[in-house]
Length: 205
Image (cartoon, rainbow, N blue to C red; front, side):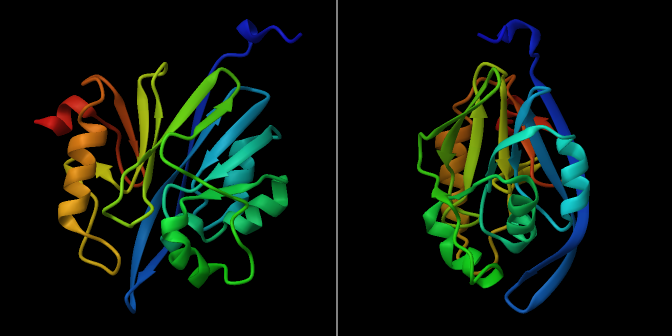
């Protein structure tokens, strides 16, 4: 048996730049790609814009899964290329399948994400929280032991994700944040899909 004690938890952030396209408009954005695991294996959270920097961040490790926090193109546009490069399956909440199909009409995600699903990598356990509003299938990924949550575009430093676009709803995202995220411990670190980290306590204010 492998000695888990010597395999310390590791978190890497890769930032890529590209275009978010929705409702006939284009926006230049920087995206956070989070790589969670240890020195042997990892899970990639979102696959945005360029595969090469993400592959470099993976650093030769075995990729257990590519988890998509939601189906907007700037979070999934290199998911298939990355999956093919590293031999990993892709998971997406099925409520965002219509967004996925615009970007990848010829390739389905490998498995669905459902509320409460658990994904394990190294010594880390991520639990999926369905947090719709920014998109119908938005999920956040909670690492209770690590005191952190990966919020995708649901919660940012300073407030909720945008809701002025197709398939988004302001009341729904507020409900998601209020009932699924602000109920987490106040010192929980929020790793966002764009921009800087925050904490649940800061955003609860």
